Length: 470
Image (cartoon, rainbow, N blue to C red; front, side):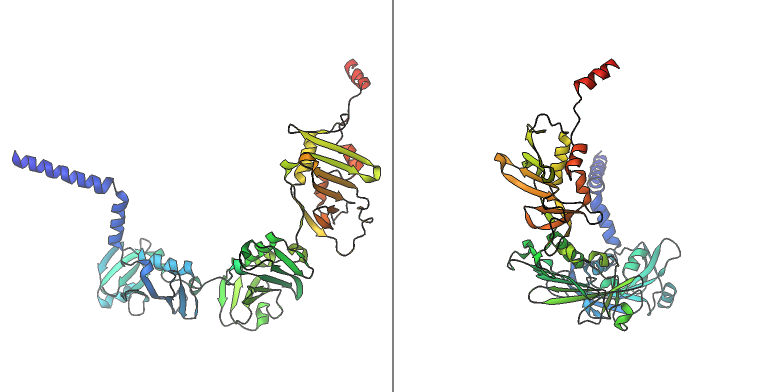
């Protein structure tokens, strides 16, 4: 009886152990099993130096430099900043390298598995000075694996996942920092853009260096004007994100890459430093080179579309902007025919001040919405001929009012020209703009358009009688 009781207690204890380890913590159990299979017990962040064979031949030497955990630099076969993502992929593949199966082999048999003296090798050194070396061999006949061994266990051959083996023998370009420009956008103070030797524009960030990220950009050439902050920010972002798809360390003559007479030249300054970038194109390939450097980058061709082609792209384009929910009344005037109509918003419903004027309230709503953001498609330079543009007097003048009849915005539109847009003047900017023709879909461009598209016909009593009789 006593022996039976002991067996029961042991069985219960074993059951509890199985429950705790197998059921309550399955992830912990799986991690423990994976850890037991790993060839290299290594902490990725502790690796300070790594040498590995490259898929294109030769080897690369990388060292972690500085206090930053991701501060890797290539020392062989070229001196160049390391790529955080590329080096990180190697470290992950190394730390997660698992043995699927193993067997013993003599030194004479290692060549059969591609693990002889000429095998691809990975050597790593930790911060504490611990060093290990791994050999990578041929693919296994079956199972999607490859052979590998630790040089500290020279007769123990392991089968490891083939994708891990490939990650441990990358291309050199995967280990190089692919940024074409080492930009810190918040410190940038000026940008100059040239295309085919022609100046497109020079913009500078206004305001002091402190808080420059929130500063306003200004165009200083070829004209002085406020710049389009969003367009400049997009250009800076595109350059900051520009990545090389390949590196040419020993380039031929600049003309080979279209860089003798570059298609695009960009100059960027931070106040203390300046950097220039040349872009060239040959057939379908686009190349870049930093001024003062022989290194040529091969880059995606979309960057040529991202660089402004005209000065207007860099100029401020907002004709006016009004918050629609602040508008309480508006007037539409047609000076040539001396017509003026006023509309007001009462209880969220638009109606004409003239009770006899019937207009669809939705037309007023669409007009107000059109004013929420009007952007120019062009700017009239010099001293524009207002009469010739249909602005003296204007074809139509719309004025928006807020609370207590305070004027919010005023827009005057001239004569529509196909292909050039509609001349426009707004009280928020003292200049003549060109705006998109489609604006005429929401705003009546003349008295005739207002009568035909806005005014609803009022049925007469006589016509109504005829309808009834029919």
